[in-house]
Image (cartoon, rainbow, N blue to C red; front, side, top):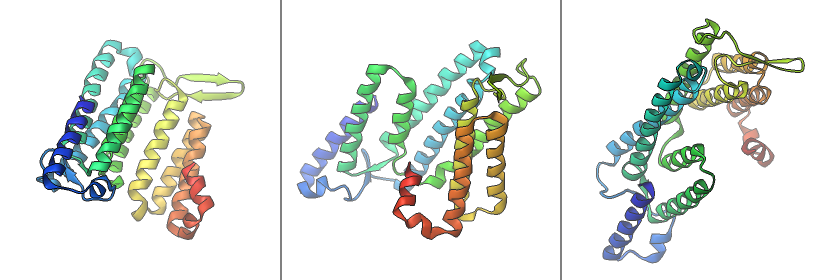
Amino acid sequence: LLLAGLGLATALFLITAFFRKTGLKELASYSSPQQMLWVDQGTQLRRKCGVFLYALALVALLAEVTFFNTQFRLVFPEFSDWANIQLDRIIFWALILKTLFFTRYNFAQLLVTDIVYFALRWVFFNNHNPWLVFAIFFVIAAKDLKMEEICLPYALASALGTGTTILFSLFGVWGYTVLQEHYNITVRRWFGFTFHNTLGGVLFGLCSAWLLYRQAKARWADWLAVFAVGCFTMFGVASRTAGLCIFFLVIASLCGRYLEFLLKMKPIQVLLSA
């Protein structure tokens, strides 16, 4: 459906350009003016609708990851399966609508989007991994969004789902207390999730979203709170990679605030990109 919609939009772009006698150089320029697909009207309102749809898809995805696919699934498997199917539908429709009706493009950008989606969709046909489809949809639909517009709903939804799952685990609501897995002398605590590194990844995403949202107004309370989450991830959950990434995130955020000149150095930029 998305591929067909993008193809029709590209054809309409070409037809419109032909009647307007748009030059090939202007048409192929990646920096030429952008417009909404189909009818270029109500741009500001449609942008806000696009932000809402993308945030809705993020919240639905986080509900799956942080709640319905945790130990909740072991206790209520049938309801969990039903809820995941409904949430998947919300994600797909929200992202398809966002991409086709609430995103600005010029012809070059739209053509690149067509090619990228077609190629990655072909990869999916060969491995049938649904998470790859989610990744494709979220990357394409993220166009025309500002980071701060989506970081707050991401952080709030992640904190709500993760906090609920951890509390339910600690109080034995699932029928378990804190699932543990032993690796030699290391105890990995799952806290309601089905694997300790899943929880570590969720906490790293939560901390990233919060610091990105708060970076311009971050205070020591923000950095200390994220550092505390890093300590919990490292020593409580024993997800070492995620814990180290959270510590590095705090250091990078502090450097961005107080040592901005470091971020302009090429080696530092390469390290951060890695």
